[in-house]
Image 1 (cartoon, rainbow, N blue to C red):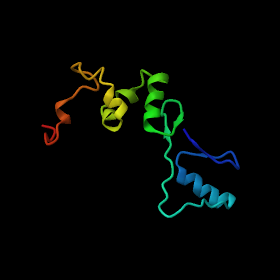
Image 2: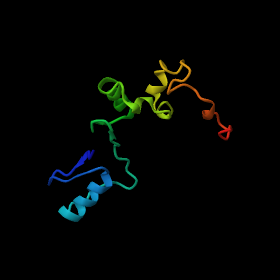
Image 3: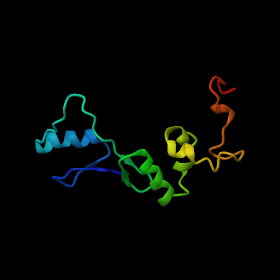
Length: 111
C-alpha cells in the first residue's frame, strides 16, 4: 500500500519522506516547512489501503469495513486507541484475544 502519491508523475511511496525526497531529486521541488512544523499524519488501513487523518477514523473504518480483521483483535490494539478502550465487548470473556492476561502485568517478568 503506497498512500503518498506524486502529483507530477505515476510514482507512489509508503512514507512521506520518500515522496519528499523524490520530489526534490526528480522534479526539483522542495517542500517549504517552518522549523519543527508539525505536519498531518496519515493512518493507512493494512487491509485495503484506505487512508484516514486520525487513528480513531481508521479504527471506525476497520469496524465498518473489516469487522473480522485481525488488526482489531491484536493484543496491543486496545492500548493505542481510546475507541478500542471503549469497546470492551470481548474483554470480559476468558480466553478472548482482548482479555486481560497475566503476562500484561507490569513487573511479572513473563514468569
